Length: 152
Image (cartoon, rainbow, N blue to C red; front, side):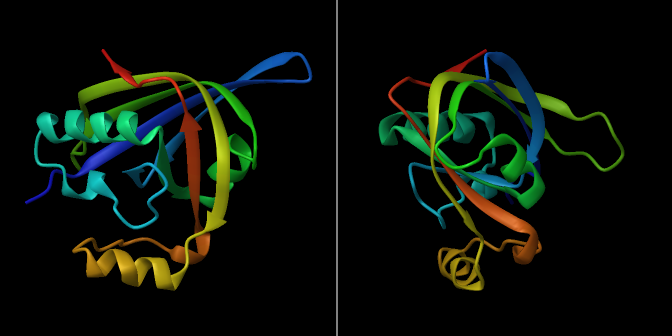
């Protein structure tokens, strides 16, 4: 059985000469530009998270599935993002989220933002991934980078 994750993201960027940063929750993450291979839905151990980060580094970026209002606020199309920090926590309904892994990367660019469609949900299901979210209120965001995600 896959581990239930709580994925917290912090993004920082400069706009009009001012630095800004925001936090957001992310439903799931895929390496590269994949819109259906949500590997965080298959995580069973920290080793799986490390493999995901290796795949993200090899692919030169990642794709996030998140609520529309977070996507709009943090990642408008073509935004240059100075820093993204992602914290993977083991989700526990009674509280006490334990941090499994924290990773960060500098110098990313938003390359694509699009709505999650029923077609993408069906394609993911074909890969054995069930997305239990409201597709009408979700966005797929792709970030590209030449830098590597590092862990702490």
